[in-house]
Figure 1 (cartoon, one colour):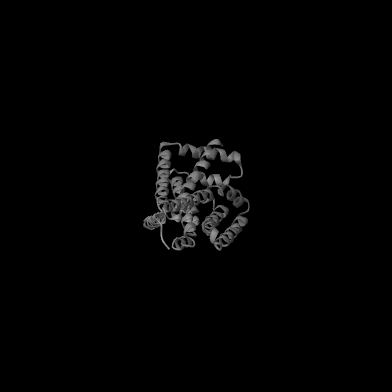
Figure 2: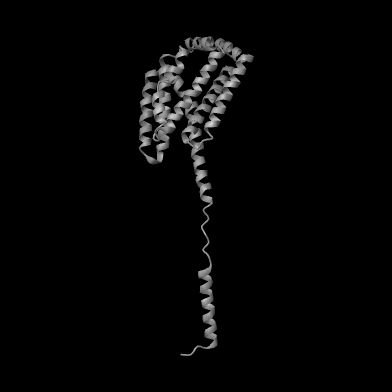
Amino acid sequence: MFLTPDKVELGNRSLQRKSLVQSKPLTPINTSAFPQILASASLSSHWTVWIFSLFLVSVPVFFEAPLVRHAPWLSLIFSVGWLAIAKHLQENTKHHMWGNLIWGFSLTWLCGSLYWGWLRWQPAYHVPVEAIALPWAIWAIREDTHRIGGWFYIGSLVGTTITDLYFYVAHLFPHWQSLMQVESDVTLAQPILKNALSLVETPWGMTWACLLAALLLVTANKAMKSSDLGYWAFGGAVLGTIFVDLLFFAVAMLG
């Protein structure tokens, strides 16, 4: 069988194309976007934890406060319900983070029910009672399964402590006691609130309010610079206490 010049040239072209295909380097897969995608997902989780931590500190206060005043035992039983919900969510890998957070919230609800249900006339007992669950929280921050909830509880406790410190330095504890004794009578409560606001609006009261608020903001901001979800829960809980204080201050002024 003889090869014609045309066939020889065609064969040479085919060999050249195969050589080019084999010698052409494979285009590498661009993996530079992967860290950005992962970082974006992680950041979303951090902000989600932060928002829900702020929510759990601030919003439930307005439900627990009237409940614990009229039915303290029912409020205390609700703590068991929150713990049950937390355990149920933690058993599901997809919802474990939420169960972790609600576990910490159940501790704050339990302590709040104990104080506001039976000891709210004694402001000096507030922080000690709110800190009853601190040993569990300290244990929790060392465990991955409860770390977020533990830091949430500690953040809430820090915010409560700073708020009570302000009440002490602004000489508001006597007004606290008086207000708790007449809480069901709006007519008697209004003069007490006005007297308390007059102390808050003094240079001494405003200076301490700004200093302690700045302390809480700096503390929360520093915690949120970490990649740890627990620290973000801490930051959200700390800022949630500021939000609650501002709301009560606004209600007192409008009243």
